[in-house]
Image (cartoon, rainbow, N blue to C red; front, side, top):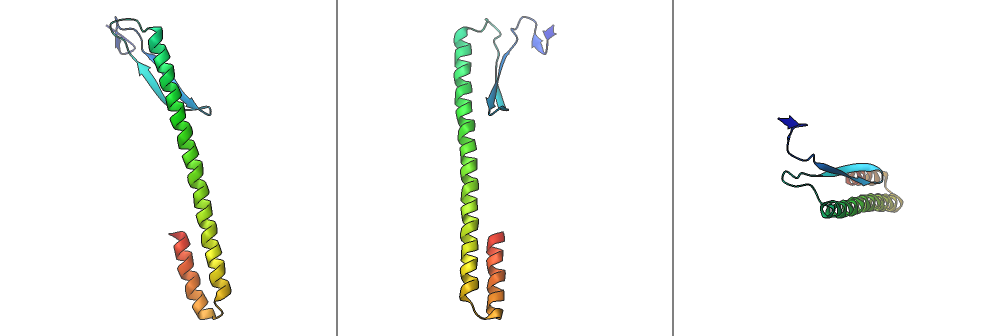
Length: 107
């Protein structure tokens, strides 16, 4: 006979969600079929949760950093475009340069 999908003689699993800034990004589930889980197991589980939170924090930092780098790249491209506009007096030449520079920005 089973209880919640587990054999009747099995202890129910211990589930610990990994949270970062109020959002869940994973969980650790521990099963023990032969003996009850010890406090050492719970301590190890909490240590793993701390490691997981550190990983989530690092991912968040990298995401923010990547966004900042994209913004800097866009500003650099716009500055380059402004220089091309101000240094090209001929309208026909300027129109082809504008098209080429906008393609660079969009790609």
